[in-house]
Image 1 (cartoon, rainbow, N blue to C red):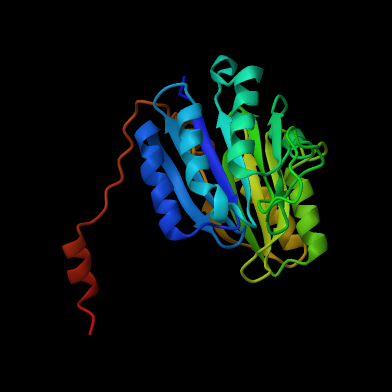
Image 2: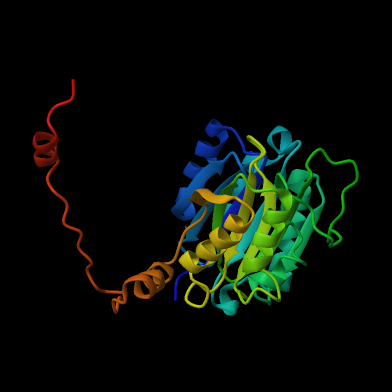
Amino acid sequence: MPGPLLRLVASPPISPHAFDDIQAALSRHGAILAAGHDADLNVSALTLALAGDDFGAPIRSFAQRFAGSIAAGRAFRVELLSDDPVRQPGDESLRAIAVELHGEFSASIYVGRRTVPVSAWAFVRPMPWGRRGLAVGQTSPMLPFGEAACHGVAVEVGAPSVLFKVRLENLPEEGLLRACNAVSGPESGFIDVAAYPAASAADGTATVAMEFGDGSRSLLSRGLAVLEIEAQRYGGRLGQAALLSHVPLESLLAVLRARTGLSAHTGQVLETHLPRQDAVFHRAGPKE
């Protein structure tokens, strides 16, 4: 079973210099699986595969670098993820992490533990995706802090999920909400998918923040296909999509099996034969 993951999300995005600094610091505690910024969702996101089971040391590295002036005007989500509940921090460890973040950030700390599918978690999580980045949910903070410069820090514990961003071009508000309801919620049939409607912080285009739980039960490609079908009903179309987190190999293989009929599984070698670059150049001819 894969080791624990630490996922950090900051909104609005942090500067490239500060982002490079935190990546260098966290790489001492494991392997960076994904890191980047997204202008539409107005976030910076990073996923770290821990070398061991200790969340404390990398969280301290994060807090020491992001507390203070960098935290002002921002919200942060700290996700402690593992498929094995035993490797998730217990209540005592979780409270100790919350107390440490409370002291470092001088901000309200929200805590939640996901025990339900991501579609249900969307309604109760401490810090869901909002219209233009992270937003504080309906839960009260475990450790409140009045008049803080930082909007808050949420610590969420649970099984891993995959984060996706999708732009839906030329889609009106009603169509955006209908499209999200088609792939998320009790009537959608996608129990392991959550879709959060948003407006691009860059240009206002309809945007969806998607989270996939068990990728073998809710295929990434199937969720996107249904989203596109619903968008087309309102004259919209699927635009740019971007992966904002790691993606498990098994999720990719499940998509491959469904789309190609191949019996793909871990350990196989799948080859793609591409023509040599010089052959392509000669066949196409040199460009003026």
